[in-house]
Image (tube, rainbow, N blue to C red; front, side, top):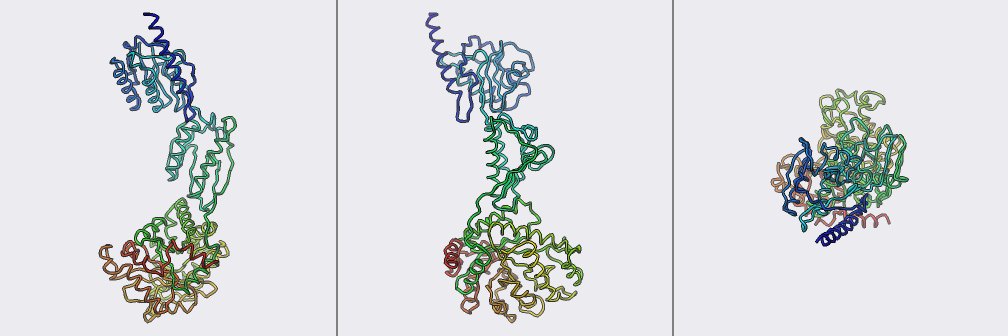
Length: 625
């Protein structure tokens, strides 16, 4: 009988040794430090209690309950449970208790590590984290509860230790251990979470805290404020690791950070206190290479029945969202889109970067980008881009370098120039429409100052030339198609005639009209707005088009009965039949004229003369080749 029991126990031991060794290796490079661990039958386990810390976490509580339930189900024995508040003798210790056996066993355990061992009359089950303690309990239930024999089996000696193999043994920056660092996401939450997981699971086993902004301490900073689409850098400075890129290149910068850790010699990475690594990703291919090619496309359209059609972003900073909204309403993508740089001052550079990247990618599909800027009132910024200066004389002060008004205006100019330069550096040419509707009386930069008088046309032209020379010469923005776009006019007062502040052919490439219609075909009124612009013999477009006055409804359901996309098509057809050549048209956003609001967008897709975004690559190839 004793011989039979001995053979049975030997067979159980062999099976367990084989199974434990097999569990020592896994796909995430985890190993069992004690591959040759031996086990023994635990005959008197019925006299033991399962003990957790009095201050245990919810995860540790759950792990204890799970173990207690499993022992009952597999052996039929209902063990007592307790906390470490009171002393005990025979105990199965789960998690981080205040028993010395638990404390000693948990020393030097990393996040994923765990140990199962017998120390005197204590059975210790503990991990380097709640997660690994839970895994240790799962392992114990699977390997050490013999349901057939209704008993427990305990590893002998140093017990069973699960050691997760990390790629790095040590990582310091200027002598500071990386475990003391936090991750500053700067709105890159998903990327920060991924780095946290990789640092925990793959590289070091340390769990780094994520914060939205920097406070005190050392940080791995995820910075997507790089405006150049293709550039990225890893910068070690002032105790921080700044991983910087554009909304598109940041991921490659993060990959380079991983490569640095992957290539650490002997698993030891010691970064100097300061240093920089830079790189670039590939830029999308732009089908029109420069300003001249873009202008050639527009000139072709001016002399052809085809035209571009799209809409404005207005105050939005999400080009893709506006493109998707248009495409959903129309059934095909817009071939031209306008970006108002008005909101740049309200957003961080990371938001700029996303918009720039979207613009570059839109251009790579053949889309044409136009830009404008509602400049902030330099004297009364609280009025936004509206209001006036206090006197006509202050107009000249705005144009005089170094004055307070000029400096305030330059903040707007420089903001716009920085944005446009990033687009230029990505190889994209765009239309730029300064001083739009300046023949009116509703912006601070409009000519009509009411009771104060009218800004002289030459002073208006001087402002145009100031911007032109500053952007061209100081900022090197040779990618801009300069677009002159007054408001339509049928009056000798406001709006003033559309020719009022035309800067001259040398300073202008394209002309257009802003036209919010009341349904009266106003561009052919007594002011002959469209024909006067055609006289300049340049590509001509509707730079802003939409509804106003009694044609504007409060809801889309009402709007579709007043003015919808069929009316846009009818108007374009009338212009075509009258010889009013047009290269492009851009409707305004939202209730001012967007297809998604006015309705019947399919009319635009069905109008054979409108070129969709999907048709642009072939059109551009045809024109430029």
